[in-house]
Image (tube, rainbow, N blue to C red):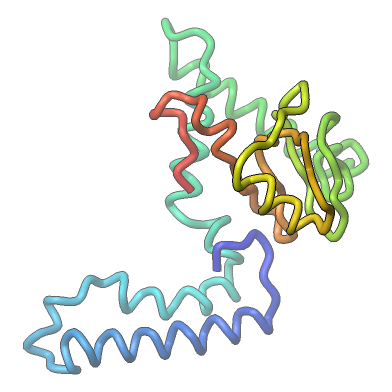
Length: 192
């Protein structure tokens, strides 16, 4: 349910799993007794409605409060004139709307679409893409890491590797590595 695009078959499968989960949860924790219903948070029941809402308005990741809060946070980070933050925030919002409108009218201008990768990325094939940052120089692998990497790669020994910052998965999600995340302050860490 957390994908940007979702097929009807995936929605039906998710509906079956969520309905089964809700029933088991309610049976286990309040045993369908109306006197105990106050023990159940409304989100338990509302989870079962996610698939119906997704069929009407699209994927929850595109319409949820979390997405909107992240957008507001991202716009807040782009404020360059803290003396007049609301005016500057409005200008950033207008700029994003204009860019999105251009991309919708002229899709060829959108260089971030599928099939295009950042300049220093590495396409691994099958929909996987290593994304920057990465080590400028190869590092020597030592200890148990050598055995694990060489066994996975099917080669006798892998003496040097590069660390990469993140990996774009088949579904468009980004898997982040400790290599980059450990260098950030705690407030800037990606918690997803």
